[in-house]
Image (cartoon, one colour):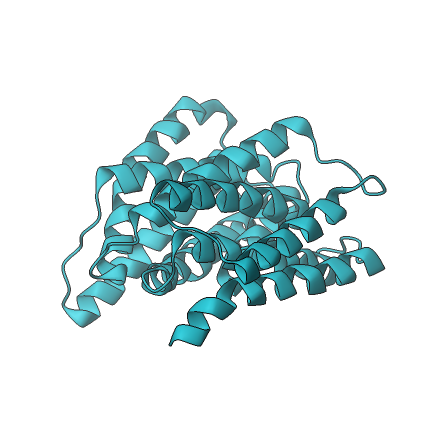
Length: 266
């Protein structure tokens, strides 16, 4: 979850401060992730896997994510992203027959209630276009996570998915070639986001998600907006309020309740 929050912080910092455009950031991020994971596979003598469907959903997530952060703060963006992820994966879990127990229901309500409190009037509402893009990004990430639950080799699958996403990123760059802008700082942020917090972080997530149900996988990701908001306050000078700190405790407590039933069975 720290890697996911790092994506929000690096992307917002790059697109707010460095001068790189969203299409270029998306392409460099995905290329850096693909290269990092391919090198790790070479060291372990594994074969690249993945598929076009997962590559497309990964690209859709990354592209919408970048364009959304042209206007959203890190904390607000992460909140919208993982709210959409939670809904997508919870609905998928319900369709697959997963049901919430009483403690899980209480935890989900607490976590979602905390996020609602964070959005109540008193803070600046996020721009509508940016909010819609981030919600779309969250839906794409939810499907990407669900597609990865059956993977046999998380590192190989993630590497393949990054490679499969590159043609889509190239098409995006060609479509907006007149608007491409580069900077050394922006490229550095994109490389860090792609190689570290995306490539390696997603491989770790693909490993973890195989031991979680769809409801639980969706719920644990609700910690990301809290981490991103706190990181935004410390690193990007975004506001840190008492309400934010209280909501952080509510959300994390709700996640603990969501995960408690599975921990009790182990």
